[in-house]
Length: 222
Image (cartoon, rainbow, N blue to C red; front, side, top):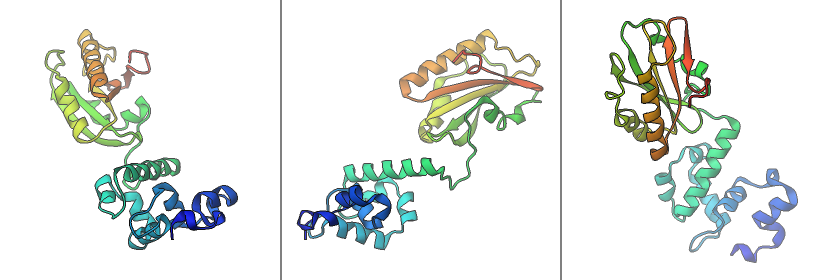
């Protein structure tokens, strides 16, 4: 039986409007997202079959290729499901990996304390996903920073590989003076411009000293 052959009160979309989403079965909610079924099965039957093989938790963990392996799910349906799943995770702050959240320079500093007492300048990058979670931390270079020695490729290649949405760059000043040098300003500008081209934001540049830090973002320099 096709969905259009069901009484209007039994069709998922109409039922949601009349009774509220909380009164729909899991298969009916999934059917609304999928919109259409496949040959031989209407969308409710297809949804029931999917849920009989994969738990709701398992569905939330599926990737785009995983969804495309399910009979009846094409590219458009997979994209719709992934968007709905991700929005749900963000609303509930679901984070199975327990990755640190980084929103401010102070949050970043919790990951940069090892730079405080180093005798040489270390330039590092914190790679952050779209949910402001730290994906990884990479050491980019060691030694006195020079604008000609820091290449955008070294900063952005790991970001692309890790699907990072933002980057916080950071380095220490062994002298104890947190104010940025001319090279610091040049490096920051070069990386910000590169990030705009690649669509990966340089969210901040943090200079770390023993007793504090300097944030380019906090000072309006980014």
